[in-house]
Length: 134
Image (cartoon, rainbow, N blue to C red; front, side, top):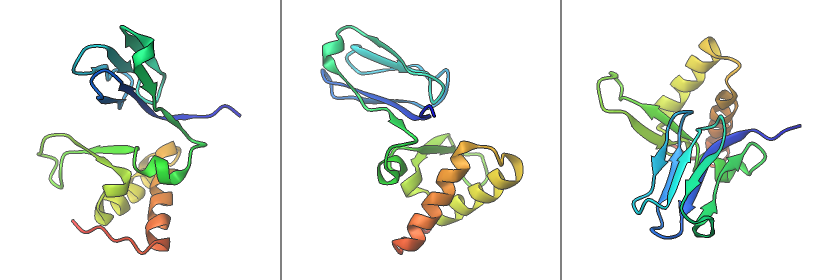
């Protein structure tokens, strides 16, 4: 079975910027211009001046959950949806947001592969007695 790309991430070893491409057309470039990352979780595309100065950091569904929970992000615009878009690590989502995500995804997108990771995060928190309030 082919592994699924979950986190499209690389580091420029010239300026030490860590770049995430969060969605298919999210083309991001480091501060010094040596590296660009594109493709989100759809594909990996790298544009670089010197391949010797980049470190590949992408993660797949067969990587450890502890690593994934600190690298999977969820975007949101606040409780009322009127705040600027902010991306938050799965491990840092507040409990209310996480529970609402599970409810929404279960009802509206039950085939979303992220639903599995939201549920794993909830179980991880229960097992490790982690509570994150708003």
